[in-house]
Length: 168
Image (tube, rainbow, N blue to C red):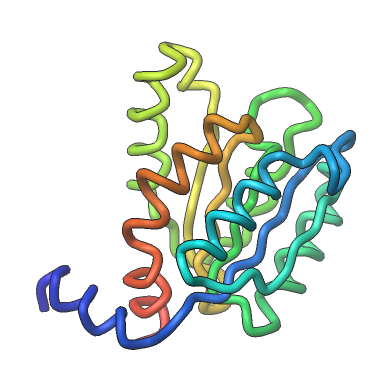
């Protein structure tokens, strides 16, 4: 089947249930601009926010939240933060070890588009995506520009297709 046919089949499945995880040692619900943006973007595009958490970048917390959201009705988990190369950035490491299937094209496209915005610093991003327990997982840097770029240019255009494809 062509991607166009897949997308049309996916359209009939209704709204996608999406969880948001912000990985930060300092953000609160009031200061989490990424969480606020994603919640608004998800709801205005007709989808459902099935969960939202802010957690510290601790491997055990990342693993627990992944398992928690992938055990419920969530179809897609959007992570932001913890993808850099500093010692505190462990989100990528935990997710990369647990993903059952990876979507390398997401990270590649994300870094290509990021290059247009931030230049060579785009190579520091370890943005990734894949499948875990029948859910699609995306992980992006924690900057507002990165979250917006990933949502608008990569995730939203394929969201229903991804949610359908992983369960068919």
